[in-house]
Amino acid sequence: MSWGWVMAIIAACMVAMLVGFAIWLWRLLTDIYAEVVVLGRRADEVARLLGTLDLAPLEHPDPRRDIRQRAGVEPRVDAGGAADDEDDEW
Picture 1: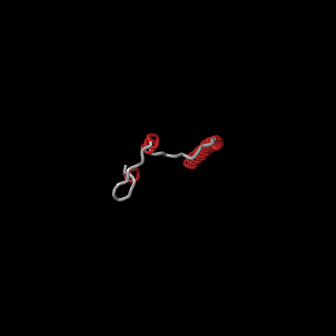
Picture 2: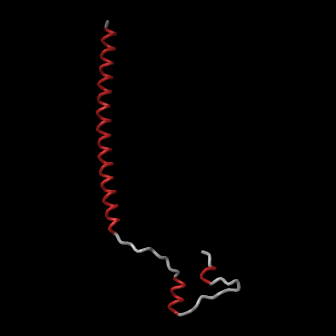
Picture 3: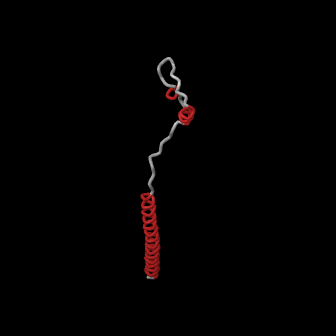
């Protein structure tokens, strides 16, 4: 008969442990959800701030062409007909 009580106590301890684990897991998930909500708000703020920026299209001018235009020098043309600016490979 004492084995029955031992098993009942072990089962009660297991149920208590499962309830404790479920409470811990619920708290963890609510904390994670709260952080995800905060992250979403921050992403909205960043998107709103980026939306207020008025950026002109970025151009990447060729610095050699800019220097040649300032100096009034035309680009050289080789025998194949390609201009010096277009023939360079980086």
